[in-house]
Amino acid sequence: MSFHYSRQGLSQQERRWERFFQILPGFASWTVILGMIGLSFWQPIAAAIGMIVFNFYWLLRMLYITIFLWLSYFRLSLEAQTDWMARVKALDAYLASGMEALAPSAEGNFKKRLSAWIYARQMRALRKGRTAPPSSGEITHLVIIPAVKETRAILEPGISRIADGSFPASRIVIVLALEDRADASVKQGAEELKTAYGARFEDFLVIYHPADLPGEARVKGANITYAARRAQLYFAQKGTPQEKIVVSCFDADTVVSPDYFACLTAAFILCPDRYRASFQPIPVYHNNIWDVPGFARVLETGASLFQLTEATDPDKLVTFSSHSMSFKALVEVDYWPVDMISDDSAIFWKALLHYRGDYRVVPMNITVSMDVIDAGNIFKTALSVYKQKRRWAWGVENFPIVMRGFMKTPEMDWRDKIRHGFKLFEGHLAWATWPFLLAVIGWLPALFASREFENSVLYYSAPRISGTIFNLAMLSLITTIILSFCLLPKSKSKRSIFVRAVHAFEWLLVPPIMIFFSALPALDAQTRLMFARYLEFWVSEKKRTSSS
Image (cartoon, rainbow, N blue to C red):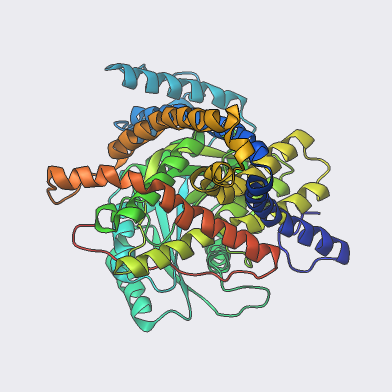
């Protein structure tokens, strides 16, 4: 029997375990923060030693992240000039030959030859797959785009890009999943988009999600699940097999690369276990990156770099924001949760438990771009960014459910349980505590030091050791700044050298930004979960300008 991925309808024993695991992340974060503050006051020597050890660990993590960040960037740049439709056609020819005739190696520079070699290895690996791969002509793409207050101006750029992409739009079905409670202007915009673009796609459906259905909360997962169930009926009537459908769930502001669906098609065919996998592009926040306040630009650039690093470790990668998967798998796991805010990551954990650990995320070396929050002025934007990051941090609600799921799935390898459980817990603990430790608490032992401590060797050594560690960490920060400028899109309006210098110096705001717009929202979310004060879904404000 499949594990019920929800905190609702639990037995008394399950409720006790649920509350224990709900309390654990927040309790651990507050224990680290308050414990280090107390230790700095009562035992500054022990606190100083603890901070030196932590700073050294943080340095190693920074160096590790920097190395893999550049490796991931290299892999992304490796495929920057790839003609994905040409590769899809070559893959079709390979399948038609009975997986015997490989395409000839590409000519050109080192990157092109390396990319072709990797692709050839993936093609050979198809012979070991559990099921015969479909050809590209058999695949239909279903794209679900949820909306509640997003206007046509927000939705149209993404839909237009899909229609103009290299993959034939005639094999793509668009579903605009609108909340029935949406304003009339939003509904009108959706119908106008259907009229304007409907003929270019295989079909264009506008599905209205009724409010307050039994068992549902007011969350995005309820909306997209309702739309997916309606799409299942639609494809059943057409006789389209579920295993030949790839479903992508995009945020309303998502704008894909022109080759996105060609790349996704190739990734789906090349994956030997395509029905037990999600496909994750690299999300970047570039749509309006030059139109927002500096703190928001630094924060979202950092979020993009974090996702770029995550793509280097497929064994621990979790779906985030816009993602794709087999429609067959989506139906088998019973769609996205309808009572959780963090549906994008929850669908991975739900599938992992459903298939008893036999599920993975395949990183795609292609980007999808979204909006940075812009609420009109710096103060409203700051408040909206805080709420958005708290909503992201509310992904901690998965931790108690996943841990209960591990307890209910003895067939799953215990090493996988430890690996996934530790990463989930450690990630949220680091999110809520590291910025406080690095920017504030690390300096407290010297501040609270007694005269005895001031006369010790450690008192004089600790600042020098910490300074050396931070100087080494600066190398990682500098390389990160350089890489961020490599990733950012060029501004459509010409900017002076002074303005460009200001953009570089914005990175000096990283410490306060990470405290107020990363650690504090995460600690807020964990504290709310600890006291069972559950969040409701909040729709972030989006605005487009002529330069976006």
